[in-house]
Amino acid sequence: MESDSLKEGDLVVVVGSTRKRKGNVEINHMIARIIAVGKEDVFAMDTESSYKSYRTFSVPKSRCILVDDSVIDPLGDILSPRLGNLVMSIIDKFGKQEKKIGVLTEIVDVPGRCKMGKILQGETVESASLDSMIVLE
Image (cartoon, rainbow, N blue to C red; front, side, top):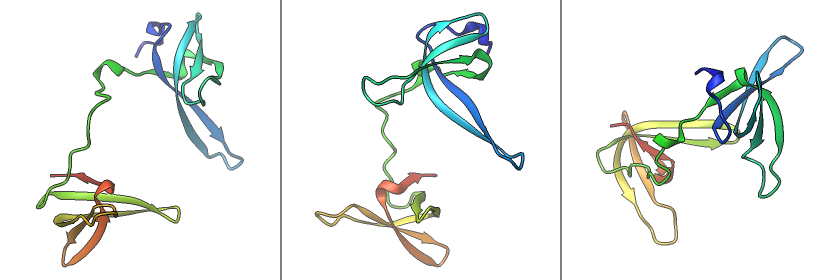
């Protein structure tokens, strides 16, 4: 993307970094809205701040990636897993991700509890929340 094409009102991902003593570099990202454009820099507004406390900052155009939000469906729904689908479940457990991949063999819908699914992984059956699943096939 040509950084010269940025204009007021554009939604961008702004990229930054954290440099550590051992030479490691971690990349940071945030979503921002361009509010003014200069020769090589822009003023942007942090869209992730709490209501009515937006933070304005300057950043080089070279650290901005334009987001084409016209192709995004903000009302899109996650495909609901069905029996027989190949699914993946990922949950965060004690700071680590637990991933399960297999065939959805059972859906358990007990009133007052979250819907659960049984996933056949090889010869073992694992339980996982339906909300933690996406359909692979």
